[in-house]
Image (cartoon, rainbow, N blue to C red):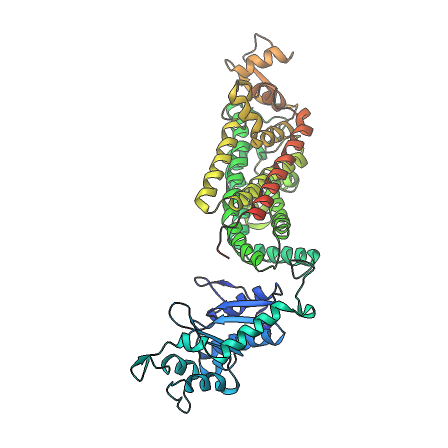
Length: 530
């Protein structure tokens, strides 16, 4: 109908990056409104900015819509004669909005021409465009008297006939012609859901600047942060020892990972969601879809990418056996271990190497690490979607992002350890979802009981081991402790795997809160003129 079938696989794009032409966008805008199956369609200068061919294509599409029994009302500026002849009726207004003519055009605009010529207008010339002629032909003065064409119309037969028709319709309407709908939407909920989920999924697939970038960020930071502990990746864990500074650095690395990936997730999702939100407002106004469809679609579209980003950062624990053992074998034949690393990187395992840097060489639960890391990415992403639906613009959404990221940074338990948070600060710790993610990852990933950390006099950790571990006595200046003991010492016994159930429940509540906030905002707010 709108001659868009050949463009069905094309991207709308933008004027800067390319995409559909101006005329194609006009037809697409009409198609979007028509998708709501309206009984009447209003268009404001649909041919403006188009050449003769483009205007004809758009008008031909409008004519097809009218032929389906729908009313099409359009304002139009200087149409060609071919375009003008496509209209059935015309409403001509003068300055001030007064009606000069309303009625059928007639074959070859004969009704319009006869009306004006019979009242003293200049006769139309052969081949002259009636649309241009009707604006110039009516005289302003006749026999020394000013001619008011609005008054002429109100005293004409056309005006009387129109009033009589309106009155008769109001007095005895034809019920068989009454337009009723079972639903405010043109399709069923299941169809709207299917179309919307597919559409948002396609938008995500066509947004490499968003999805590829955040995947690369995850890989890049996994390598950069994990490379600090690279020597522990290929050293025998039975003889390898972390210093206390390295152990503290490892805890800090996990803290940075959660906040850096979380910050990138919430910051990158906002502009993408804003574009989707603004288009949704127009679609909702046209009766094409409701807020629930977008709400569910925006949730499902994020899931595979959230899982992917979390997996890319976390996969080192699972894949260490595929990289560490070949690395040790290769090391026997290479004098320089760094040459061995470069060789593996360039040949067999580039993606695995980036995320396998020895950070997770412990007996911790990979599923727990990946699961809670996924919680972190998901909550940040979904709160980003909710924020841009709650507020109007990106700067305001950025302020909300800063508030939630700042809260997580300060109250996660790394900047200020939980045993030192008292009073009001303790409330912030309880309300920060970053605290529950960080606690769970630390408690589950660094629960190794084997002696891996070397405590040396006069460290506080050595005093802790002397009090807690029978193997360490007061006369020792060096003692080896486990990561489980170091976690217990660093966080005052607050971070433990016994809180896993509570933490999962609270994180699920945060996810639900983010989703419900977006649902409410999509239902109640509209920040675009529709």
